[in-house]
Image: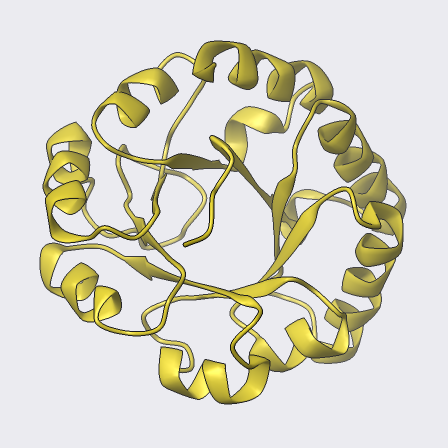
Amino acid sequence: MIILPHLYAIVDAACFENKGTFLAYTEELMAGGVTLLQYRNKSDNARQMLGQARELKRQAGPRVKLIMNDRADLCIAAEFDGVHLGQDDLSPKGARRVIGDKLWLGVSTHNPDQLKAADATSTDYVAIGPVFPTTSKRNPDPAIGLEGVRKARTLTRKPLVAIGGITRSSCRSVIEAGADSVAVISDLLRDPRKSAEEFFRVLR
């Protein structure tokens, strides 16, 4: 079974004006102690995504595990460490055919039925959310709250990642509710190095 760090940083390419600001941001996250980072890009084409992903891989080196959002094919092409699937993406079984058995596979779930279905697959970790209201998705699923995290914890023995509206002020309660890791986008954007360091201090 894999071991997840308490903080799972998600970097959304849409939040940055250009490749330079994107790479400067990710460097600050790594300087702040981030060791697990998901690259998310919902707007660019595959060629642009691959180019940016390869830049990120060169920058991160062996310091950080890199997870590709949605695209198992680009995970392989960019030599990332794993792929994270949504409910409308390739199935876990299909993703395994692409990435093999050694790379990490995560799946987003939003309710108990989805979580139980994901738990029955070869996924290495399961994500649950949104825990709190979030602005990172256009049409988010209903927030599940801390009770939803507690429920999710009873349904799987796999590492559990909580996502959605989690901040430095709420992350400890999410871990105490049963999550192994908190996935964060928005509350890392301002002063990323300092923000990451503060997350780790709270989550010690």
